Image (cartoon, rainbow, N blue to C red; front, side, top):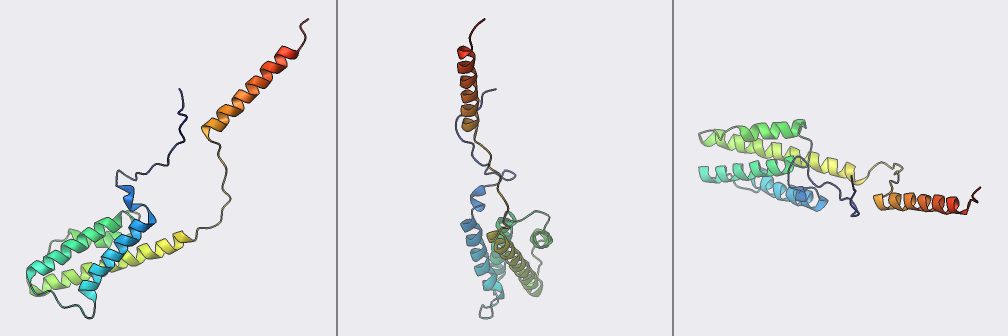
Length: 161
């Protein structure tokens, strides 16, 4: 088996998902976008959606935010499971039930954003650990070559009897 001379890259995929979400800037941008949508629903100055189409549009936006933010945290997180459960329920019929569902979904999304930001703050200050240095494959190859060359020179310098 022959190893590549090219340095190995860190794996960028987590369960087949797009890892453009993994960089810190992308997570914060999604959280900001979700916060804006939540503010449209829960803000003190925001009006109540008038038509069923407005409610449906906001619910679809919140579902999209929950899906995108779900990639940034463990799949078994209770806050995420609650938000996904609300997303899976269909939009109820009627004026009042649909608005109540919209508010609950916005509150669940707000909790999800808060959890992600809380985890992000904890991740920005990692515990100090001693990092173990692992040599690259080319360093190991060079060391083996140097030992082999030293043995060859030593064997050639020993007098024959």
